[in-house]
Length: 309
Image 1 (cartoon, rainbow, N blue to C red):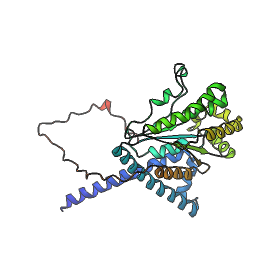
Image 2: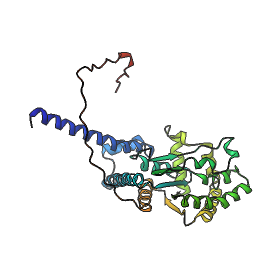
Image 3: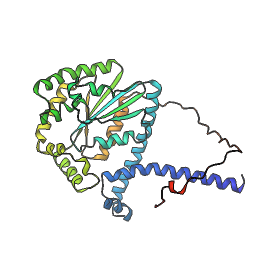
Image 4: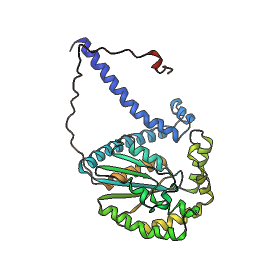
C-alpha cells in the first residue's frame, strides 16, 4: 500500500470513528434533560466519585447494548411482518418520554414510530372514543409506541371530569373487547405503567419550573395533578384492576431511578417479543460514477449559512 493510500485509509478510519462518537454524543446531549450543565461540568472536573463514574459507564454500556438488540428486533419485525403496539402510561414526569426516546433513538422512524395525540378536537369528541387511535395502529412490519393512549379516559378524563359516569363505564366495558380484537388481528399489545413516588414527582416538577429548557413540559393540567394526587391513585388502581387481561397485561415499571427504569423497561420489552437476529446480506458500496462532461455549478455566496461555529 502506497503512502498516499495509507493516509487515505487512516483518514477514512478517523472519520468513521468520529461519526460513531457523534452518534454516542446524542445520548450525552439527551442527558441535559435529566441534569444541569453544572453537573455535566462536574464530570469533567473530576468531582464525581469513582463509584458514580463507574455506574455511569455501566449505564451507557448497557444502554448501547440494549439499543443494539432493539435494532435486531426492528429487523425481525420487518422480516416477519409482526405488528406491535406499546402503550406508555403513568403519572406526569414519571419518565415515559425518556424511555420512548431511548427505544426509538437508533431505530428507523418508518418502522418504529411514536403516537402522541393531543386533546381531542370538537369533531373527535363526537366520534367513537377509540376512533382517533385506530388510525395510528401498525401495519405489518411496524411498531407503534403510544405516549399516552386510550387510557386517558380512565385517568386524566376521569379525574378532571372530562367524561361523565356513563362514558367512563362504557370505556371499561369496551376496552377489553377492543384489545382482544387487536390481539385477534395479529397485533401484539404491551402496556407499561410508570410508577413514581409523590416526593419524586415533586422534585421533578421543581426541576422543570426552574429550568427554562423544561418549562414547556409543565402544563396547567400537570400542576393540577399535584393537587389531585390521591384521585389519580384511585383512578389508576381501578384501571389496572379492570383492564389487566391475558391478551394485554399491564406491566409496572418502577420509575424513581430514571436510568434504571429505562434499562429495565427496554430489557423487559425485548423479552416480550420472540425476535431473533436476521442475517443481512453484506453491503457493497458502489463506486461513484464520474462523467468527464459534468461541471459542478458554484453556489452563490449569499445562499451559504454563515459558519459561526
